[in-house]
Amino acid sequence: MIFEEIRDLIANRTTLSVIVITMQASLKDDLNLDSFDLAELAMELEDTFEVTILDEQLVRFQTVSDIVAFIEQQSNQK
Image (cartoon, rainbow, N blue to C red; front, side, top):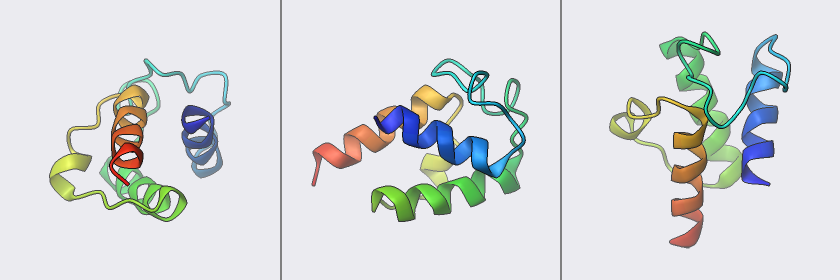
């Protein structure tokens, strides 16, 4: 469920099909997200999942899986 929400956020923010947004997809290499895209995505993630994403955490996100794991971890701490 978390993956699907994140996938949909990325798809809505880009012209990418949900088919190419997989857990293993590289944010930079596969999805072509730049630092501006990632910053805007982080704001949407914060609003959607009611979490805080620090800049240090954001730069560690390499794949969609990294984002899912972070959101799951934050959700478990609530």
